[in-house]
Image 1 (tube, rainbow, N blue to C red):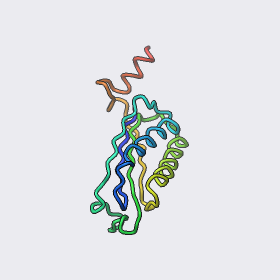
Image 2: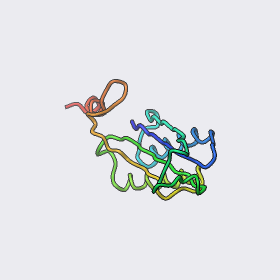
Image 3: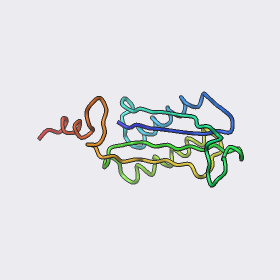
Image 4: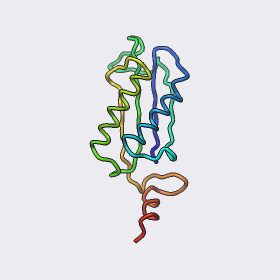
Length: 134
């Protein structure tokens, strides 16, 4: 189960991006982090360009896009190499979708304790214990 949140801003509104970004995020979660796309949830939100600042300036004023991608995964389920590959692929994929990016775009692979979250009323560690009794 990952939960992926993506906020982005572009110089011009582009409503078609939401589905494309959601698809990219879910695909990269599966390809780079081994996450099951069947239980991957993605929330994509376009941000107000007037409210996005980097170093006190709006990136859209310079014709640049920006994004923040936060994926929550169970702690200990991915290696440094996997998370590095995910961060790199996410930045490259978002650049391909959004166009020129400000360098200060962030990808956060948030490792969370498996007792602290889950879905369907069960924690991630509870799911693991059910599959690995004893």
